[in-house]
Every structure is written in C-alpha cells, then in structure tokens.
Length: 222
Image 1: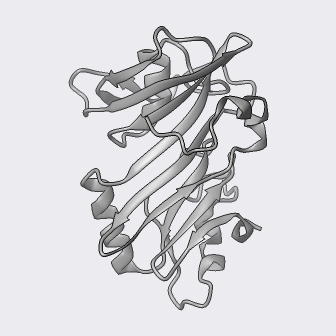
Image 2 (image 1 turned 90 degrees about the horizontal axis):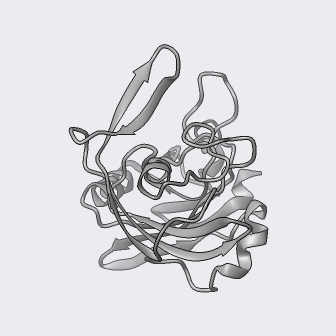
C-alpha cells in the first residue's frame, strides 16, 4: 500500500516516497496515480489531502502532500518563493566534463504532431537553473547530484541531456529509454517558522542498488 511509503507526517504535511512508474496526477489512460489514492492518506482527517508539487511518473522519491487547504497555500507559496530545497540523484548515460557546476539554460515547451510535446532549450523560454555535482563513475556512467534552483517541467532531464551532454539513464524522451529511469528525489527541505522545518530523505530505490556505495550516508546537497 502507498500508505506504507509515508516518510513523514504531522498535522500539516505528509511526505511520500513516491515509487517510480506511478503518476502524481490521474493519467488519461486511467492507470493508477497518487491523486486516485489520496483519500487513503486522510489518517483521521475529514478533508482529502492534496499534492503540493509534481514528480514525473518515472521519477521516485520525496513528494510533499498538504493535509488541508491552508497548509497547501503556505507550502505552495514557499515553493514559489524558492524557499524549498530539493536534492536529486541521477545516473547519466555517460560521464560529463568536470566535477560540478551550474547549468543555466532557459526552457520552453514545444509540441509537434510527430513527437508530441517536450521541453527544449530556448533563450526566449523561462529561466531554468540547476546546480550539479559529480558523485562517482562506474561502468562508463556517472552518478550525479542535482539541486534545482528553479522548478520547470522536465528541468533536470533536459539539463542533463543538453547541459551535461548525457541524458539520464532510462529517460524515454530525452535519452535512449529501454530501462528504468534513474532519477530519484532524495531530499526535501521546507522551512516552517516558527515550527520545525520538514527535512526528509528518501532511501534509494532498488534500481540504484549498484550505486549506493558512491553516495554518502548524509543527504546529498550541492
């Protein structure tokens, strides 16, 4: 059950360790989603909780859920103000140059009849900034930490492919696909003065097992 994957809960918030392959919003194809299961996350509350942000279907890890509308409004404002820190780990299909840095490539949505929609680098698009750090290399692939400074759709996936020159392993849109996509939302930090901050780390999924030794016990923060 999804409720077994709750990493944090209090009167305002739930942090779910969303598994890869599960959409947040209900898909058009009618497949399962976090949205469809939100009633099971009431835990004694009358109101159905709501997801505050989104993770791609194939991305695993920390998903923030608000337990009531007031909390949702505050959390959404914190995201908008850039107060929420999110840290990801990913495996790239190759090894980028350097040990880390900043990717600053604006993004825009492009749609064609042949390929459908995707995000592309476009100087006229919305600002998109990602900090990255190399964690290790094995078998010709690189394990990297990503800390997005903005929250654009598919930002990390495009920045990996276009900014670092190597798509995330398993990415079916910006890479080769053919295997599970190795992108994991490892840590979520949300200040809540005067309350204690929400600071949650999601364990690595089994798909990252061979890379676990390259990640320190401390949360990855660029």
